[in-house]
Length: 452
Image 1 (cartoon, rainbow, N blue to C red):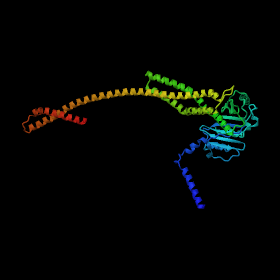
Image 2: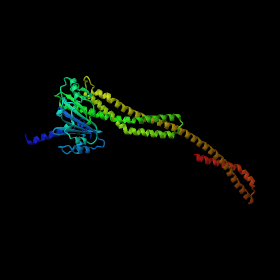
Image 3: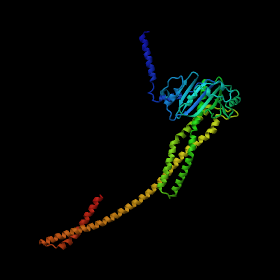
Image 4: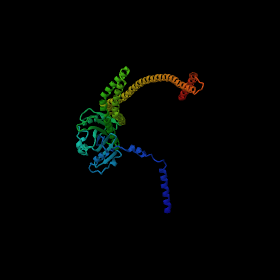
């Protein structure tokens, strides 16, 4: 076959492929970003036995540049730039461990995955783990931010034929504390924890799974448990705020009750009531502006906690609570307190608005009465002015008539003096009705002209 024919076929195939790829309208600017969101934080692949260390720090006031500089202090890693952190997820692989960096809206989490130290087997009792970490303690202490959650998760390969016996061994491993435990995934693994904060600042979790557990399943188990505890801590951040607002809300409710009673009594001035109400409204609105995000975030994090508990698909082990039951008993009252405080704050704001509406109505009624009184006074004044004007018009007609008749009289005297047979007095007297009628007609015409 000639070479030119082969080239023509290749060009035709390329054109066909290009036409297929252009079979859709142009992409929205956010399409690729939104589509790839499901792949932004893939779960780690973990080979049992393993040690997973998760540290979550609040990142308020901490920039990506600062976090990038801290990651660059890791030995044996290429130079990172802030552009490498724009995706909010980064996995760094080393010879004997891996470090995952995740930035969320309020916190950043650093997760270390490494092989389990030999002294941390299930036969140990509260084994020491910090000295065996692949990351230097100084590097961990220098992580920018304030710690909100720190977890050491140990994952061991063990048989689950007798879950009760495994639970007893796990309890000794955790230091013989009261624990919560459950079979996850309807029996593919066991999780045991005491939710206690050690002197080192970490809490511990222990996962027991069969030796044939896949690396991807182990990674998903680790992600769910670590996210569950991290989101639990983030959800509880609203509790201190709710407790702090309690006295202020009680005082504000008492003040509002007093204002409402004073409104009903009608003895206090509207200005005093308005000043008190405005001060109270400003205080409540400031509290709402400062804390509404925290309360909303608490509800969002609590929803994530409940979702992670559902994903565990727990089955109970005789003799202990499941993780989900423990969370429901201990976390639910705190979340209920936050929700009640948020509703109380919103309700107080609405009640203040209603009280303000009542006060405005009261002021409007008083203003309307004052306006009616003012209108009555204006109307009365206009009536008096009209009467006065008519009186003045009458006097003006008489005065004008008098001056005109005087002119007629003097004109008659002048004519009589000139020898004309005219009696000035008779002529003046005869002209009075004519002049008076003319002045009245002219005055009325002028009045009609101005009214028009």
